[in-house]
Image (cartoon, rainbow, N blue to C red; front, side, top):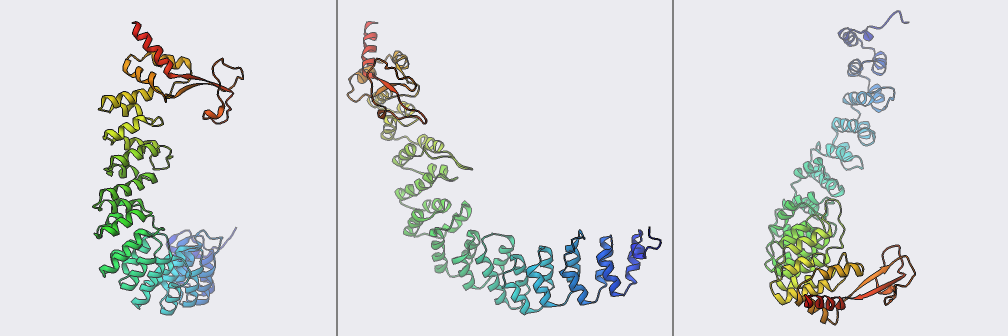
Length: 441
């Protein structure tokens, strides 16, 4: 147990601070700065130090015993005047707040320029650049930082706002890695012809993946040339830019081709693209071919996209094509929308004459035909020369069914199974049998 406790260790806060303020001995102040139990006592001791060697030692020593080692270093840095040491701390210290404190303490323009153009942390380089007296050096530093960094941070936005030099704005507009900053620089280029060239190069750059619809519209808005807009719509990798360019095309066929590109990509703008398409043929093609696409995070599924396209189809020829397509999941709905009685009859006949979902064997087929009362449809099926067969497939037993056997290559095989045998039922015979039943009623 200590019998005598120094006044600066007193539990009385005011008494301890008063004791430190009376000390001038640098060694004692150093000991207090590194060993006092309370933060405010250590800070008071550091602020009374005048020895640059001692301050340099405290500024560069990460004392793991102290929970606030970074704070100790920052306070020491505020009283440090060695510019070379401050520059080294700004570039190499492991703690961001310490690096920034060192950069803010720098006053020598050569050292500031060295830190600003060095390989240190981005926010430290920008902090040093803001203190440069020469505006051209500061703007070059800002431009280099923007061009070489991909992260769109608030610091880089502020840096871009400080750039006014036309050549530097053009450089950023040509080579910046961040799409938003690059476009923001292009919008500030005063020469309209140069700005238009930069906008076009930006839009067709394969590395540009702009997804913000508002920014895409702002980028495309100043463009009027139809050839330029058509090239952007066909070459851009950004769906947002494709939509914005296609919306300004006078040729509806070119616009629909661009919208279809976005729909096939399946991104978050795919549904919007489908809603903008005017060609019924394009919509029918999308309805047929988008189903296999898989959904992803924040993306609609291929089935959702296909349905969206189908819901917008009103053309009878397109609806007939879909009703006749045995792989189309909504072919029955398409058939009901047909206005031509003969086309509707043919579609219904085709639907019944194919392997419909839920029709797997003889019993299913008999139940299906038992529900049909329309003699015209049954007559068409009975007379079709290309009526498709319904297969009764047995996946496990090798015993023959007594029906006609066909090879397993004639059927699509489910994953993990082999076809042992399968029986074929001619739907025309079922139609004839059902006609005979109705005739007897």
